[in-house]
Length: 255
Image (cartoon, rainbow, N blue to C red; front, side, top):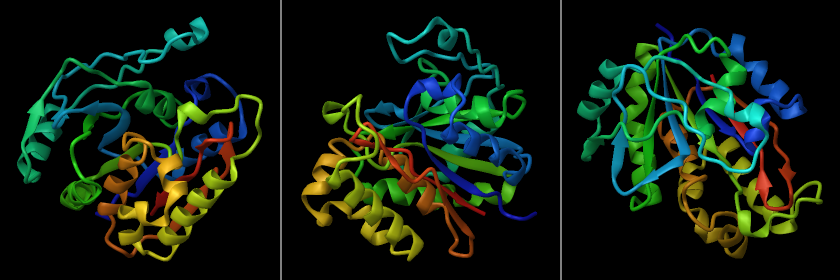
């Protein structure tokens, strides 16, 4: 079996689950390119925990971890089945402690995107949390250990944003601030050049990194994706632009 692709999506606003825009249309175009995974492992920025956690329920809930949005958003139910088998396999694969935790569910980092790519929700799906205490290298290493799942038909899907600073958002601004554009371009260039060490050690770029990644939640899922690569993939970069000053929608598909 050919290795499954690996995907990182800059998910931006939850409104992308119900709006028609250029970002969403790119997501929808992925359906055929991603083939038909046997299962999906999502690493979402919005399950940010102490330690690494995983769900193993047969029917995880759709949760609405955002506030103040239109009612239509809260009516979306992403009713994909879970996969206890995949969850237990991941626990065995990873060299770090992994706690089963079913207190969470499919959060909007996961369902707002997959709702557009696989609207039928007919592919088994689980989430793995982002450990807030792990180093960037540790996140990357987890991705390396997960890489073997690609041979088993599992789509490894990271959902976050390369640049994400809610405290500096300008709702009226098109594009990104200079520091946001600098950081985003730096990450894109190093991924294109396969200089993944520079992505892991992104802080060395300086001040733009401090602004772009004030905490690791939205950036870390990218490192799981990069860790899962074997180096022979074809890279597609899409939705590579800033919005609201301090957020980027940049996304990567490795096939």
